[in-house]
Length: 155
Image (tube, rainbow, N blue to C red; front, side):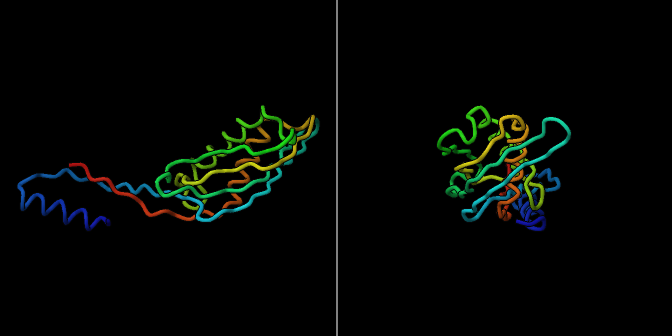
């Protein structure tokens, strides 16, 4: 519905039902999502004298069903200790941080899951911050599109 539609309905309610309406500027709740499975391979590497930052993650973004369009899920399917388990919460946090601001329009991303398949860490340079930034970089490799917005009318 556009702004004109809302104005017409509000006027009809005033005229036909004698029900005054308080209207405001409509807020459009755009969302971004990933439409088809996309593989990612991202390396976050930053060296500045001393200990640097290193984190590599590989996996796939998979769209969720239409009923779950508001969810963002993280699934760890790594085998072995390529990425130590204590870095998994940082990867999950990076995913959710990246989804809060989206890629195309800055609106929230949702409706997909990140399946982590493999990765790499460095004994000295890897940290939670490095894997969080690697996760944010991986989301940028996704191919998002804008989902139609939903409008709520309160009576």
